[in-house]
Length: 153
Image (cartoon, rainbow, N blue to C red; front, side, top):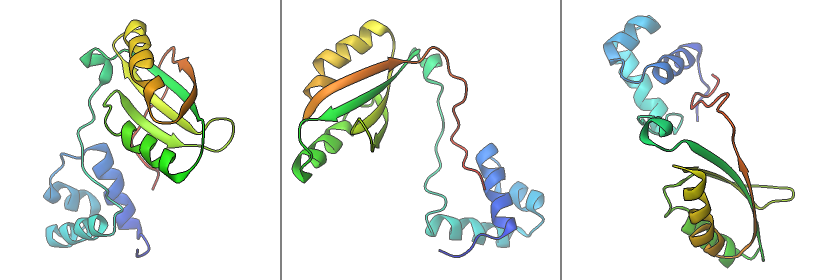
């Protein structure tokens, strides 16, 4: 990966804040030609700095008003169990984030649900049956203070 120049950082900030902006508009805002801007964007994509372009939906506008952070501990930590758990997590769209952790828990999951009752059902019927689960400690968020997809540049 090559070093990021200030113009790359500016492009990334512009794209994060308004991903629908055209290459022409990006080029104008970054002070470069359309072709140079397009090449830089393609390089940032090929180097994996731009991972993908997505539309961020508001879960609460779609009825998912409950955010649960769940700390999970596994019974064993062999490769087969870890791989099976991580593969199973991918199959559940309610699990929107999964981190492998150090410390007291093995994984931290962010789960969205339409209600506490829906989360309880998900916990009983799905989460507790994922491969290798020993325990789950759930924490319900009271409100969203900050949630961003932007990465500092």
